Length: 484
Image 1: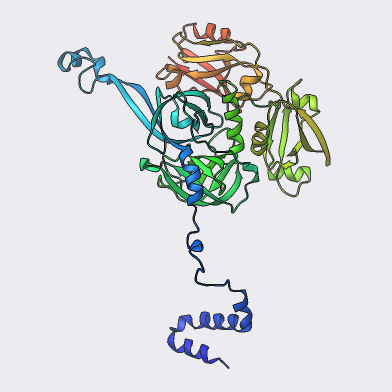
Image 2: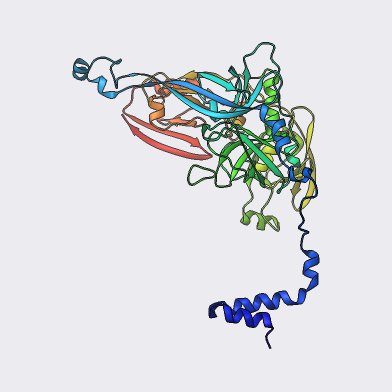
């Protein structure tokens, strides 16, 4: 027997909706008055203050410390037609329209003032290669800025505003480890160069480690609208404190699709502290062990319920890891009581520790929990010889260096590796055109083992029509054959 309401619905709805309507009525009927008790109260605001609830106080506090960063670099432009003397005869020299010359490329991003004396944090990719950098404040004042420190591993850079006797508004750092999924955050920057803009959202996820943007894969994910031009801008909490530096978006269109990533403030603190101390590079603790991800197969072999932690693949003799007693096949599951989900998470946690003192590692060894204390010290930067290969060869234009523990750490190479590594490549050089990259480790050339930079310089200076080269890239050994 149906209720009057269900009869009425049956008469007024098409037949395909009848089953759904009946389900709705049956599901709703038993609750009666109880459903009303659980419904949130709806009422007219009782005061003007309730109508004024707003993020405006947070915005007023934070926006003066968020700046626009304008970077410019000069690049040489060459028209290959001017290599032809006949073409030059009829159409003029390099200064002719369409000929060779210099062109200024400009980029725009955002930045955050983190010190009243004018230190600005932005993304390294915003100012990479810039000859000139200018900073525009929220109050429309503009200043030139100088480079203090660049850290490509974290994609962060620190600038200093050139101004005498000026005090600037600066944001306070928050503890980004205290963030929780669901916390409300505001993103402030200059998207699409339209001017300073504020968007809001929540923390969608924490500790994103498979993004592939920087060496330290550990990002705050937010659905606050972030677009091109927001890079280097602030992600702030409702206290107006800096929780992250906006750095990338996931997008199929080039615009915001609700998936943005920010570098956590605790990583930013490390870079800023190095800049304040006068360093030109960021010194981080050195573990001296190569870690790898735990696959489902490895987890099953270790008797784990799920794949988590960072597995020790190798340990460098006399390193902090070795002195702490860390061994191959140990599974690191925590650092200073913070859980370690994977190798990327450990890298981030360890890299944000201050040099000096020690950290406590939670390790599973042979099915048992072990606690180890590892000293927090920088990697030894033993003297290493650098040189640029000038001889006509596949390596011409490559700057190479003997590998030290500090350089191996900086380039994310196996700390036990020795040899010669490419640290830079001249633009337009044969080495660049052939695809060599920074971080390539040269093992052998034409069957000659390469142990020192002078070895590579000597072999590269030998005229040859055939080049047999073996390198290591991304942990994989690659051999190529080239003919002149």
